[in-house]
Image (cartoon, rainbow, N blue to C red; front, side):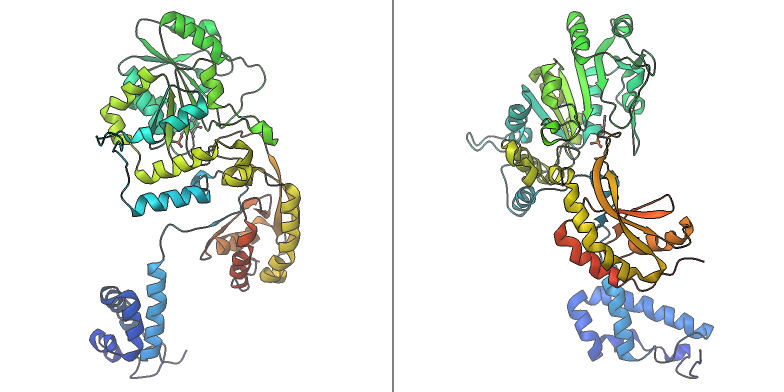
Length: 476
Ligand SMILES: *Cc1c(COP(=O)(O)O)cnc(C)c1O
């Protein structure tokens, strides 16, 4: 590149003060404010100064208009929020890394209302006395699960931590070796147990646990029998586990409460919509569990929360503990939770109203039609370096729910002609770098885009973005 002598010297860099008064900077000041513009302008000019010293400053880079345009791009980039919407084409509906359940419209409206006006968060409007925030959703949770009482904390890990610390501190908790789970992202039952100050008593073996194993392990220091839903894996073959009913009978005979960590849990029987069976909270309580904990943002389809339902004397103890105060949820969570729980009162409308359920039971034919519609457009956007085809796929529910079951789905498969995985890496990276990142799955020398979670109303945005990709030739 040819450098213009003089204009390319460090001394030729204009002053911040002069530029701030230049006409081409006025719109930037109006939009981004003086503080931000000044800070980024300083940084930009410093880089130009360095380029000038290195002799790499391009001619024309110092014109007011060019400087303003470069600064506008920097300002826009830096104003972009770190948390942003993405396209979840991974095939996992409740993807923990992508924020799990999407809130239905009703819940979003409830959150907006609760966040933009004062609310009766902790005020009993009948008596005018101070109230308890849990009571906003407790009646609903009891109605939907058959529980006596309910309380809410920040997530299910917090729910388990609270139950263990309050009911079993310095005492023993019996858990089957087959249920000592690790959930992705550092939820390990033995670690939570230690943190809660409870002593873990492992019962049985990895694949087989019998009632007598529990009976033999029960002692004077036993505080709790804990059953954990092994949500993210399946043990098959020569296996045995103890039914909740049997555990409840044993616990009742020895005066030791039984808690169940359902993980995802469900408030309704999913088989009613031809989805795989997942244990319901109501069934666990009906089987006699004293407490049940589950997540708000897994199959329930609500906000991140940990729900604890069960015996009122035990829930009362949890509620009175200082740890509960530290783990309590905010008003936005309660607003979203109440709105989502309300939808469960009319289960027949759930498939249309509850986003999670709607996505889970999307007909494969609808996704196939979508794939056929999108394939030629995506092919056109990517150019001849890639081959785009439609394909049947299997989506997962995700978040540990029903790991083995796949939901018949449809999508696009993108291959590079030389069919090496390396050729797809730049494409995968470019899709991830889009303003609204597109996330698929690289597997078996192909990039798979599952369309289950692509709302038809979002297709235009996706395609418009793909058109900006330009040519990303596969690495030779
Ligand atoms: C997901 C899960 C948890 C953790 O729940 P979070 O809401 O993510 O904190 C705990 N136990 C089981 C069995 C789970 O599946």
